[in-house]
Length: 505
Ligand code: BES
Ligand code: ZN
Ligand code: MN
Image (cartoon, rainbow, N blue to C red; front, top):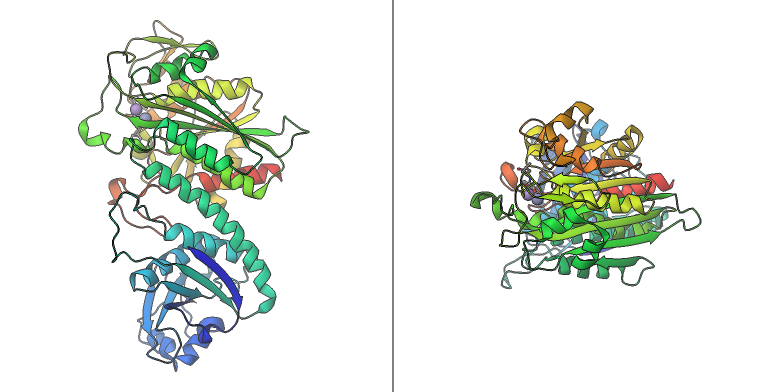
């Protein structure tokens, strides 16, 4: 979708729909909304008086201009309470209003700059949030559907700003917002691709596309190379499939003179998780093509990071493979030796994410990564603990956990820290190996996290369990929610970007 910024009078702008806004409780609209109200002979004021327009969050009232404006439709979008207003409000409002305009039949829409008026938000921040909201909120995944002439699409959104001095800042914000949204939307698309399309090799292709034309580098290790390096846990998971596993390493060097100023972003890239010989029930298996969402997120975060060029070195590692049953699959009861020498008893082949990540975090640590964040659709248990849209955070370094949590909050990604008491280690003791790969029924998300934590060496480490937060289908029915249309939502690409930018200062 195209985004433009122009200075001018929104009441003179010709588009399929014009988007204006209202805070809850306002009875006499001002600014752009006031100008449109005046052009409509007070129609919005009358709708407020009659209670049809309240300004509540989530409200988008379609008003027909019936010839009083060049645009046939006006959408009055509620901003909610002024005290709750922030950039996330702008993203949500823009996303919902754009879908409302699209569904009403508009192919081009115009909007005032939400927040940049009386709410006092900087024009740049407003432009960024509008662009993110529009591009994230209208994302669709129709690649595998037959062309449909009735399928509606919003082709462009124009921000019309009365104050010409704000246009440059709005435009700068739009450029950043579109770059962020492109990275998030790429992550969503990768996660939504069916598992016969988004294979480990296809993940390499995506990584190559991301790095193309940048200074970022990619290294891909094949099955035999990973075996030689001693990645017995990762290779054990890959044993059951003939689809070549790919261990992808991508580097962004924003501070080459200070190699220790670094962070590793490590992703679980299981492109299909059948459970392996510990086979999943049929009912839960068909969404397991999305089990590479963590791997996609770390690669796509690199795309966004490269746009901002922060002064820090970032390494992304995506450990990609299928987890399948076959006559050469690993067995429950097998013992594997990991990259750092520790051995793991395979109690359940469906607990494969922690296995591929054990080798991935140990590998990153061996290269001198001082801080790392791993991202994984690791456990069903995290959804039991936190519900559908909250990411679980775990770590061995409270400062880094706090930094990850606050970066996520800054961008509107919900997150909550869970504990990692040493006493949980009892649950994954093994009789035959150093540890086993499961921790029993209690605190399943925590033991999964802590098993990964056994391999991070001296690095400060945070684990993000996105098994239930990285998509908007699941138990809550599967509906569009703010700027997250139904489907994978690209969490935590924006949070990782914010973290890296914050760490770079
Ligand atoms: N990929 C799954 C976790 C998952 C479940 C992601 C539902 C998305 C939705 C993971 O590999 C898995 O199977 N975890 C097991 C671990 C158990 C065997 C210790 C689980 O959560 O049941
Ligand atoms: Zn899995
Ligand atoms: Mn599994």
